[in-house]
Image (tube, rainbow, N blue to C red; front, side, top):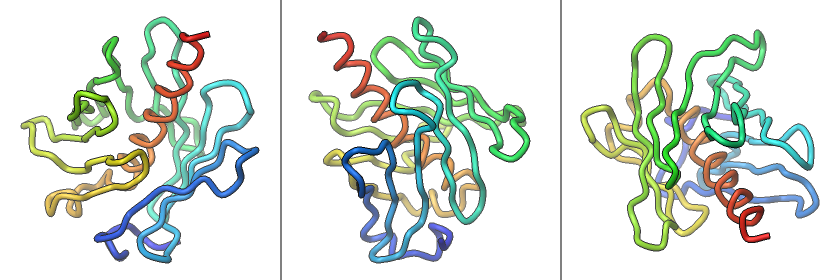
Length: 165
């Protein structure tokens, strides 16, 4: 894997290489940049890996829908995403950094990470494509945000399916 900053950021996209597995890969052009895989077929625990880190994501409980971000190696919690009923929310890091997760389309198929000052960083478009703002490349949490955003989209899809029955 190479860091996202070193990749072809004009063409960033997630793929689902194995239909029978809950595993996804982020590519920049032809370069693998990150992976996201769930521990089991059922449940919310997933591990994200990139050149600059590895984390686990897990929904805290099904009713509050908060997500805890931990370092994969130590299990130390480093951030918590407080989700609103519509899926948007605020990611709060232990070091006081904040990012906002928000829907940008009526059909809820486009989402964005924003800074705490509402500056867009990463757009998630057309269900698999990512678009980075110039400011995104300077963010220390770029890989984490790219993986966590995809995790949240997949989690929302699963929650919607479960709700429909």
